[in-house]
Length: 87
Image (cartoon, rainbow, N blue to C red):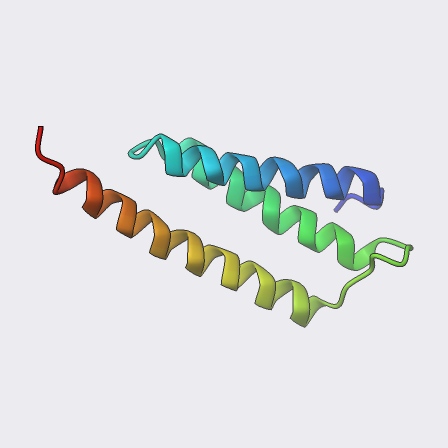
């Protein structure tokens, strides 16, 4: 894990941007997987950071599961919308 809180925040931001890229480029697997990994590592790093931004493991796990669930739901909606689109 990374103990620098600045790097943890950068990893969280990069993870969110990669997941957004997954929404824009439907069918590409790599941005979503990397974004999810960066989000999990960033949240795990914040739990061990010696700053005021320190969060507990249950909160980090809950937040990660919520983000993954919302991402899967929105991705499913986006895929259905593209399949039903008439050209």
